[in-house]
Amino acid sequence: MDRAAQREQGEQTRRALVQAAAVEFAAHGYTAAVLEHVSDRLGLTKGAVYFHFPTKAELARAVGETWTAMWAEEVARSTERGFDLQELESFMVRMTERAQHDDVWAATIRLAHDREHIPDEIPRPSEAWLTVIGVTLQASETRGELRQGVDLEAIAWQLTAHVIGMHSVMSALDDKQSPADRVRQLLDSYRSVLATTPTRR
Image 1 (tube, rainbow, N blue to C red):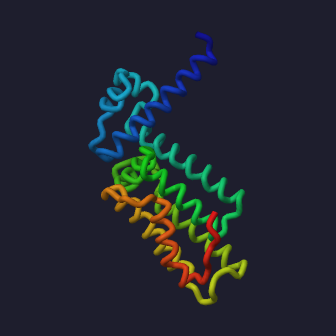
Image 2: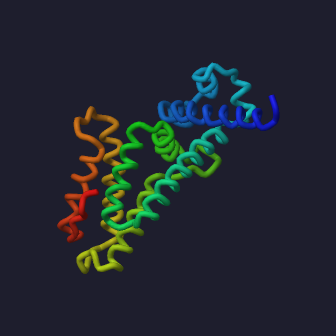
């Protein structure tokens, strides 16, 4: 096997380990996660995990970096389309759908809760949501799309709390409605405050 093929195989193994670790972290949290369980999921030896990720903290960091790259890609996609209130709804739908099925997303939320036990910096999805929502509301106010006197900081905080809570509730309950429906219901409740009714895409 040539070097290029070896590098590609190594990257594939790393990606597989990150995905397997995400399942483990999401299920058990950082302190209770067992690296041997990660290797068992892939039929590898524990040594294979340590070769790529010598510590559990490095594996947690890799999960967080994977989430960060995914989030940045989705933000860039919406920014390119124009991050107005209408696009915010589309973004929230996409990310809520991913949150229901993406092990890396679930693991990152769990790791954020366990961050005091992790020596490396772990992304905080709630802060990322607050930033995106806050920037969108500010841009919308600048364009004259919001009613005067709206407390943007308060609305951004409340929307962030609601969307994070919605992720948790939808994961815990057997919800018959889709993430898209729940997001639209959430935003509908804010339209009278924001004085805007985005056109559906």
